[in-house]
Length: 282
Image 1 (cartoon, rainbow, N blue to C red):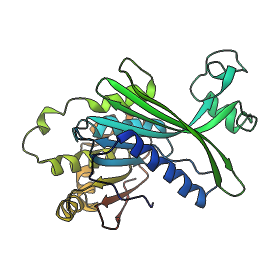
Image 2: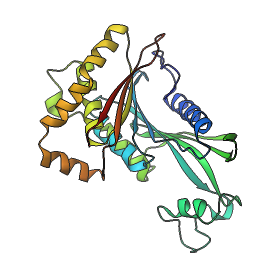
Image 3: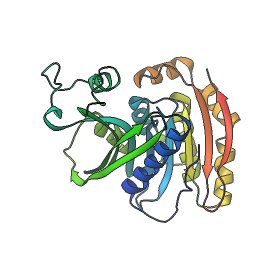
Image 4: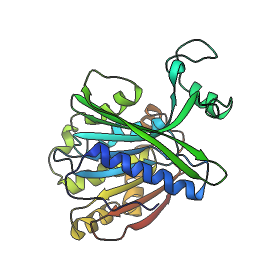
């Protein structure tokens, strides 16, 4: 997966994450005209510096939210941003399903778009939705689009941006991302430096959910530490060290039915992306 190198310069987490998701969409469509992005979950510190971005193996919203909940508290994230390929009902159908006359239920827009042709006639639009959760504030950017499925060419609409909405805003995705802002587990508060703790959090997410991680290292030396701590052997050792019953219970909690393939990648300024294939734990 090719992505722009992450910047160590503080930036707007919402804008940075949305732009990365749009790039992912465009690049994926070059390979597959039906491509949907997997959820992209980015963790930022108090200075708005990117800590890491993680991607579940599958196009599954709940897997992305599980990664946010597992990793966020361990890496001490103060802002978590999630980008998702979504559907957006328009006009008079924004609130109610025109078929049932009732409010949209989970999964109905997907059904209406992919099976009933609602996207083809404009009742539902495809969109990339990026949500940023920080303490008591929520911001979002929604960008609808149309894809020529014969060529994979995408036509983007104007962005719809909502900044710093009152923290009372709730919903499945907002609440799921907010869960990653919980206090760090007490047993990790001492005895680990930031790199060790971040690596542990990311590996735990990979073991439970599966997926890939980009780590925004501050230097080549820090990159090398991450690469050593998060090696294929280290991830497998962590998985082997968790009691099978406990691991099963954790995975059931988050609705994870398979681990899939894992890929660990490190990002360092002015350095190429290095990839280590960590295989499958299944």
